[in-house]
Amino acid sequence: MQTESRTQFAQIIELARPGTSFYLPEIACSPSAHIHPDHAMLEKKDQEWVLVNVPFASQQDALRFLGNRCDRWGCWVYPMCNSQIAEDLVHLQSFMFAIDDRAIYEREVFTRFADAMRGDRVRESPYGAAFHDLWERLREAMLPQVFDRFHEACMELIDGFLTESEPRSAGSVLPPDEYLRMHRHTIGCKECLIASEHAAGVDITAELAVDPVLGKLWQAAADHVMLVNDVLSFRKEVFAGESINIVMSLMFHQGLTLQDAIDETGSMIASVDDNFVRTCADVRSRYAGHPKEMDILRYLDALGSMMAGNLVWSYETPRYHGDGYAWCGSRSGVVELHPHCTVMR
Image (cartoon, rainbow, N blue to C red; front, side, top):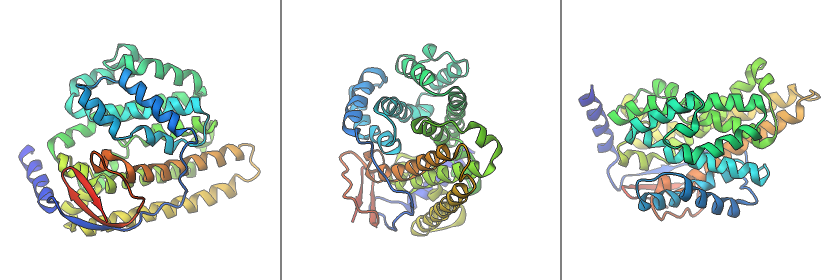
């Protein structure tokens, strides 16, 4: 099986040699992106927090991580909340980015972290110094039902990191349906979307329990984030030897060219975006005059902020496009793939 997986991935690498290019159409996203008004301060504070609290193998690794500008993801995704809530959520997402790859490269350490989280013994975990105070601040600040769901979602994400690490480390290219089923549980959107409730100052736990349409709306937003990431992180993942990506899945299992796989993924994103818009209109209509109408409207805005903010960050981040990358603001054009950078023109 290991040999078969490596053979699969070797075929994908052959289709994406350095200098390979494709045309990137503009990615569909109806909500508008807005960055937090205090983003400069939040970014500075997060960089300082990361250097003090998050364990890295070396100073070079720490500086490389800071260069990815993961701090800006939270600033784009949570633009509506006060600065203290935003600061904690920006720290949380930077921490999650920092430990993501460790599920592969430090599996034993990461497993101990997951065990500590299951027992709500964060301080005892390998990353306890980085995470304990932040976790307790979130516990105190979030409404009780929101935090309970948030804790459960974080556990699902951490377990998902471990589950996904097996095909990632093996180089397996999963069929599209299997990939989507698995990655929906490992992309991290559930905990981020619950954090969006916290950022918006709402608790719609009861409504989510009885209204399946709200669940479909949440899934549409999460799918948008997942598919956008797969398109714009393709260069990083293919040259890093990672195979968990819908573009690779379509190329291998449906025999598509790179351009056709990009176009197909773009069509999937457009369909998800259209579904999100139509479902939002339905929800607004059904909750008009409802006692929780304003909370629902704030929740819809928070979902839209996640979709639009993630898209902008995915265009701009050196995490996907290489050290020193500076996005020119163009959302479509010819994308040229190189091991160390993306070139877009």
